[in-house]
Image 1 (cartoon, one colour):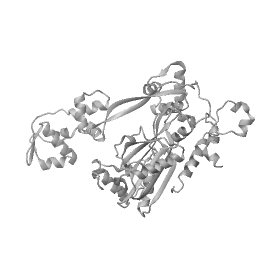
Image 2 (image 1 turned 180 degrees about the horizontal axis):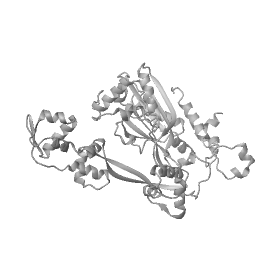
Image 3 (image 1 turned 135 degrees about the horizontal axis):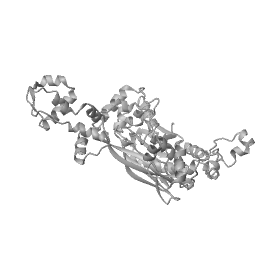
Image 4 (image 1 turned 180 degrees about the vertical axis):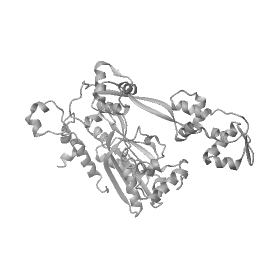
Length: 466
């Protein structure tokens, strides 16, 4: 229904200027429209451009105050006209409401607080905080000064809405052609059923060869929930990568509780208060966030589990993994919502950044990629960190192909690894090196009927007789 609505609209109109308004007009959920647009964009039936709008939303604390009133108002209303002892007032209110309410009510000059007695200084108050929160909740405008005040109290948070504007793509058609994934005897007997239909029988051949090649290069190496994907990597729970706009979270099962509890407590402590030479992030770490199940956003989620297992009985090791990862992002000529990631890491004593650079140069030279650049970068879980770039002759520019660094002590030591052990690690996509090696300038050409089967003949594995 959503696909028919999008293609049908473009048949009669030049564009869909705003996917959100379009979804509302058609009575279809925006998520469904977005999924269809991403799919059509991937097959070049449409060209989609990102739209982003920022608005303010309430935090959990803000939602609570919008419903029950601000702490200062709750405290004021709990004080009788004749006043009340501090001890009695404290019993009437939740401890956090009492503490915050006292601070704000005194600041507003609503109350007078002695050593043992509390009394009103005014007869009536307006709960402006609650009114402002309800305005924001209803999508109404609030002036900048009030926004700043609510931000300081952490009662509101920025929310980014993402949508698309859409136009006809180079392969636009009012109806998408059926894609066959197999060629059956029945297809062949009834020629009319398959003639002219695009087949994907060989779509992954080039990928499989590159995978095998990388496994040869990695010779000598051994080789979810939010906790392993983010928390164990010393990535804070407020990090934008953990937003649903960037990560695919599962609805069923939505959470897990099967985690090593002693290790979880150490990770929680590092996030909240620091340790192992770190100051931490100084926020309240929440177990429910760590329990959320997701499609892994990087293969480093596997690395954290392997390193934790290694820490129980340490010996120097080399690991690698090659697998799929998933990120909720728009498809374009260099990005896909799902892709392959290659990850390698070495755990030993005495490792330095020089070892990491040497390993990377040797690794990529075996792929025939000698034009490399390294750029300092930031990762929550590595320090120092480097982005890896290689020159793409087809695009005529340097393209980021990977990330690397040395895992931070805040990540390694809570696992139980010895203090003198270092871990160097790197990760890269499988798609981008493939594009550079074969001069492909559009990542979508690796996933469709346009795949050039000549790639197989040009692959070094063929020269090896594999």
